[in-house]
Image 1 (tube, helix red, strand yellow):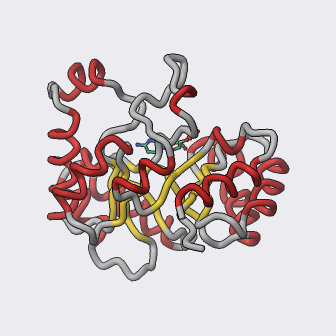
Image 2 (cartoon, helix red, strand yellow):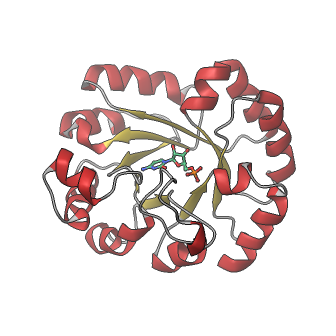
Length: 229
Ligand code: C5P
């Protein structure tokens, strides 16, 4: 089976996270550790998860001046995650130092535009009416600056693939299992189902709450795996 799911363990309960990782590790590609887990449980928590499953996407979305990001990444590389993230909007120099002299297997992914931003917010903060145009522009610069991959919403996969081709890794959050679950209260705005996202050209799907908040996470994963084979 071609494993494509990355489970976001956005939890503030370490035992629950450990239990979940043990239960799901054979069915998924990797686990994503983000702000909630990392700032609650730190390096100790990271190592606990790493011992059970060493395929970790450490998603800290760095966004700072180039020197700070470069030094931060050097510390991250010691933890040996398979993926880590920086914001593309940190600029060319910040992106360049992220991949410069990198003697690590960690792939650097550039965050294009957060999947939680809708059209209105994108217009307000980026002065751009067309989300695809914006995401394509950021993807283009990420490719020029030699990042290894991109994080984008499922709705932009096709446009991004057209812009950067097949070689960049496309990691896609904003996944909801059924259309009827898209509701206004959800902080994720630009969402699609797993099958749609894979059809459009995603390499990996980041899925958090639809799995972590389910009564039977293993069944959810197995059902998704079946639907995307
Ligand atoms: O719970 P849910 O499935 O919405 O989780 C999505 C995960 O993907 C979260 O951990 C979030 O930090 C991450 N993410 C995102 N949008 C991005 C990049 C990462 O939602 N652009």
